[in-house]
Length: 116
Image 1: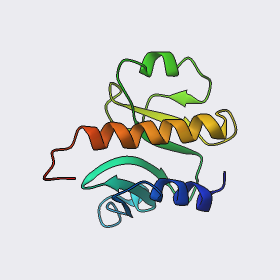
Image 2: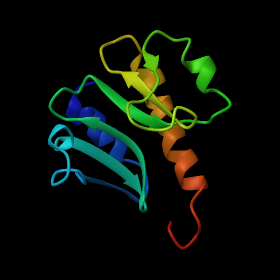
Image 3: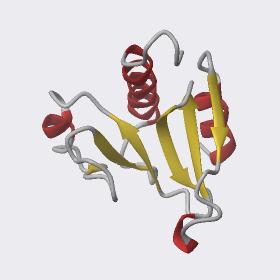
Image 4: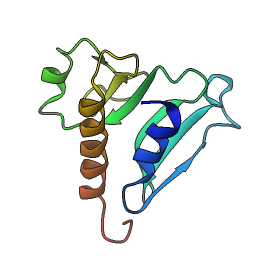
């Protein structure tokens, strides 16, 4: 999946929008594209490298998922709730889409009705 297909897939979920919230803060984070449901993020990646994405994940399955070669601990987020997924073919497109959908669903389910 290329970057535009990835972006279109993330934006295909209801109430989803994108943003680049770190442009004015951190030099190394200026090219981070974040996907939100409501005001909560569920996926992000660096548009300059497009080598991995970070996704919210059910804590009960994180350890099992990390047994897969393409799934690792996230950079700079809680290891209990987030995973980093390689975008270099180590994870199938089907599995990647499933993880993105689960991330979106998990974040949306945790939102109050006011924030949806």
